[in-house]
Image 1 (tube, rainbow, N blue to C red):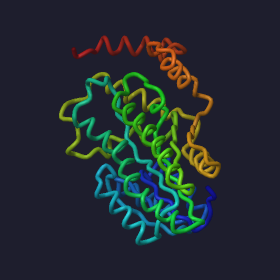
Image 2: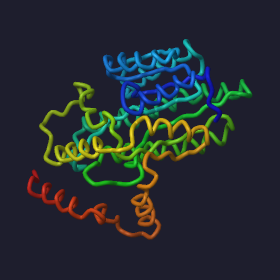
Image 3: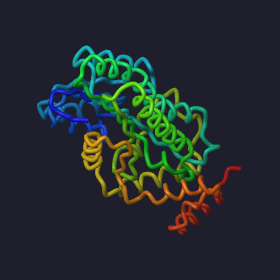
Length: 304
């Protein structure tokens, strides 16, 4: 896709991390920017940074897990800028722990943001992008869904997060195939970042009150939170680096986008397990001390 000034980019989860950097990258290219986030104060501060680039900007507060919020986002975008050219279904939250210890509210929260939020964006925006393509020979559109390396491998103690990110990968692969059936002017990509310093390890701060857990975190959930915070904060690739790589991938028509392309060995191992009907490989075979500590911690603190 040829990216140029005057196009419009819609970004969810735009107040921080990848979403903010996508917004800044689009603004610096002279695009109109529509920023959406659930956290009003953070969105206001982020929008100020983007406005300082001189970009035309619209900000929308709301929880994209709710269909009505995405419907309003679409309506506002169409009214202000017309059909967008780029859609970043980027908003996401993190929650870990042993998979049987996730409560119904945990599932509702993480599935709502990570999967239904993406599905709402695809369901509502895609038809308008296809209609624009049919009406304008020079229109080009691209949908970028943020998944994770957790959408390509199944790390332990990250159950509900893994499920949603695998679903986003499957959704986006299907979206790409379906788009190829009906148009040559709209395409999709899936972003699979590894550990990058963003605010996702603190995403519980925006968890809706009605979906907050009724009980204290389990030992496995506390361990998952601590490991996530350490891994994310120690990442050397920045959100800005990932945004640059993502825009380059869109221009190149690249479907799979990685923040750490040199860290794909576990993906290859998993695919070989599938093809060879092997049992899932030990995820800690290269770092056995981590696996030993995790097993010891969970067995010592088991609630069963």
